[in-house]
Image 1 (cartoon, rainbow, N blue to C red):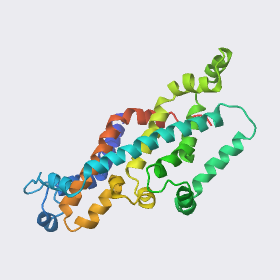
Image 2 (image 1 turned 45 degrees about the vertical axis):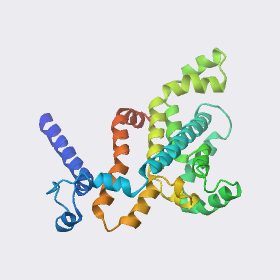
Image 3 (image 1 turned 90 degrees about the horizontal axis):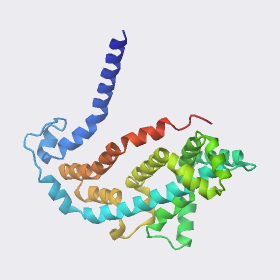
Image 4 (image 1 turned 90 degrees about the vertical axis):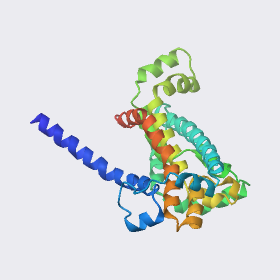
Length: 273
């Protein structure tokens, strides 16, 4: 019975994986076809004639390297800002004893209910008044102020760490910064890596931020550049699919490289509240 149950579970997982992988396979297959092949049979997985030249043509049709460089700058800055600010705030809400921290944490969690569109106009006005419009800091700067979901995620993880380690650190004379840097950070690498991965993917896929705060084509990231590619080459579906594969591939590779750390960070978060 146990073997049959496990076989059924694995079969269901394989089926679910195949269903969720089908759009990616169709995108990869379509990127190797011609427009005529796509129009004739878009759901055929194996192309009649594989056209690898679709990728060089797509690369020549847009400044991919410039878009990629801008995206990496934004991703690096946002990852640093988010991990640093959220870890510090989560430490203050979990390991520093002070009155009212539970109420402030409830307020932080409650802010997750606010849609991004509610704060869009005030944030745009503030960034414009600060002179950050049309600069990377318009997107990177707010990440240094924390993110409610990541603060919640890290706080729940920090609460699972043994209090005895922090008591021993206080006895040895460590300050709050020493406790944070020498004890909490080394023990929280899976959770911090999870936050960094989430933020990297979020920034990589971000379209609305560059759309609002950037108007210089030299500063456009990949997501915005891909949208401009769609408006220019929307009738050439094979080139659009090739560009989409190039846009998606780094994220897929990053997830497989960080998969174990990502799963460890998720599975050990929220055990203690």
